[in-house]
Length: 264
Image (cartoon, rainbow, N blue to C red; front, side, top):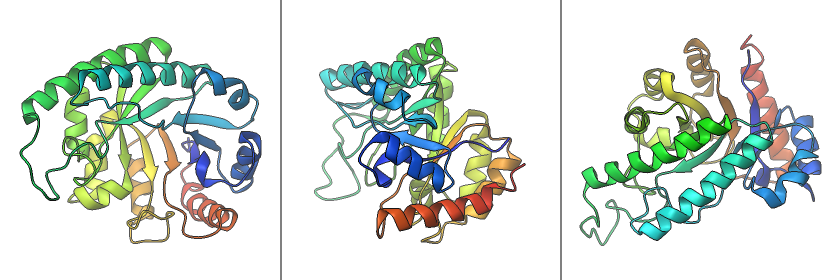
């Protein structure tokens, strides 16, 4: 079965969720990846029509925040988002270990605030707690590796898969983002095949962070790899539009449907 194909709601023109959903579906997408599935939005989202498979929420603290209060805020927010996406009949909620919190790849090259083994202990504990909540709700938390300039803890699918396995719950899966993979992975397709047992979703974005088809990521090979690996998760577009939203949406939908329609 062809996986659901969504696009982030902020990449679609329209004054309301219903208008954006209609535009996305008209362009060949199955639905929207929303930025917030919390209780206040659920009536609007539920009435929009179309699929809402995933949520990629704004951060309020990070899973592996250096500050315990930040970690607690992240847990609380992500639990609410998991409940929200479950109420909407969706698949999962996306979260990185952290984003822009600290880097060892750019000046001033300060020593890390926490040792790598301590990072791992914190992450496994957080993932286990959220995974149990997600599993009870019938959805999954999707751990997203980011490139080395955005997060120093989890950069590759193999690192994320190891953490998921250590968390020991079916409520956590890995999200692969082709933009970050283009920077971090030796071989994008080999990394996807290796992570297949825990791969729950894929963000589609080209090498330059624009729409798929605007850079040099081999999306035909990515789709073939996912199909051959028995991928049953969801696909969504997360990128920076290069031009006018409506034209970019149409071009992106045509490009991706051309690849997916032969999934069969």
